[in-house]
Amino acid sequence: MEDRRMEHSVQAVALADILDRVLDKGVVIAGDVMVSLVGVELLNIRLRLLIASVDKAVEMGINWWQSDPFLATQERQRDEQNAALQERIQRLEKLLGQPAGQERE
Image (cartoon, rainbow, N blue to C red; front, side, top):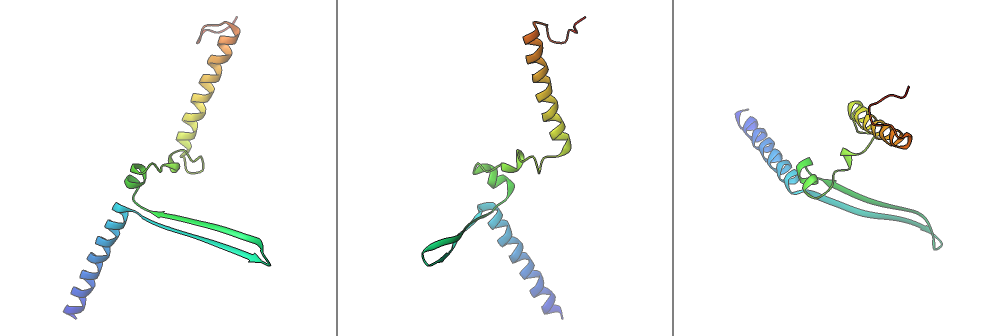
């Protein structure tokens, strides 16, 4: 029983070490699947999979999750919407010849 626990513990450490290395270095899996019938392409699937830590992905220039509206938090969306509205108000005030922040009478 004692040997079995030791073996399980060593396997867990080895798995954690492998996972740490994969996330640190990154792994890319790429593949293409094409289905044709009598020379006519019916289906073309391109698969690109990257497994890496967030830090490694940012280092490689991959940061799509930071600007994806589906993944953005509501607070971030409100901030972006507020900034866009403030910019629009400033443009409109400039068109009306009115200083920013001053109301018309």
